[in-house]
Length: 421
Image 1: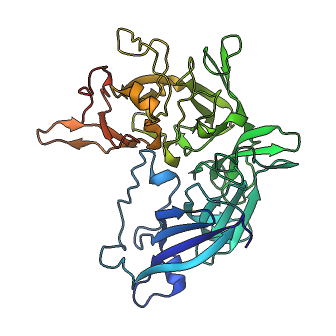
Image 2: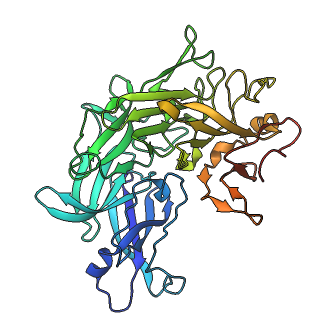
Image 3: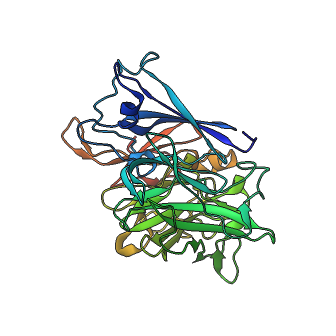
């Protein structure tokens, strides 16, 4: 194994009397994971034996990013132990794995029958489809264009030695004849041109279902990189660290600056899942700079009403700050805020937000919210019988912020009392 290779390790429970083949037919991906420079360890759990396999098609199981597995029938606190639970195998890949592996059961591979498939994407711009039972590679696809290689321009601050596929992909099992996995990758060529592209790969073959689209966007503003009143997305200056979100037929990407390098702003860009045509764009710091959406590889999250939630990196929240009569910043800059984005009529618009009262101090100390991510809490009744619809995040300032999704709290320069908790 070379220094650029990565070992992919899988563990599972071993019930008494079970054979190895029995186990592989019943496991479910992604209880825990651990990444280091050369090694990626992924703990896998068995799937349901009665209701059938449980797919993992997006980061943390659902768009709310809860990580819930509501129908677990095999794993218990008693049988997950050093005797019955352990590593089964290790697989080599051609680069680091920063994206969460995904799992789809019962995929028909042309000419090769039906398989339960584990999908792994690497920083070498490669996507693997592993058979979950035999560990054989069903297909392996590079998303690099001719003459391209993974980006190496940011070794001083990012995922050395190369940047390729960083964001966790997302799968739509109903799209196309075999289902589709959406993957975003970064690359460059000998001339120094840098590309960010979104791919829609056939789940069974790995082939592009439609031509990949180069990420591009512009937005009205006077912020970093403005030319004649327009801010433009520069593919060299951004990394797609946050996972992809598939919501109501749109694949959403959310962008961050390499090590807070300027000139950069804060982008959320959507693409039609059928054609990959760009559908909508929102810039959350159009008149200033930074505001990265790191989210530690998680986020954006969404609720049942189609709203998107993101936690933003350090940036300006309007210098005054100057708020309109509804409590929103006049300059539309939401640096370091916890933001709710409406997707009504396929248009992206800030619907609500929360910002801590001491945001200026936190910005100066780089204690931004985007080290964490949004988790939409399942609706629940409180002790008084009131329905609570909450969203939570945590940040570098060591605080956990629990907001009411119907009234997040906005900004008060004196305290955080408008926040739910």
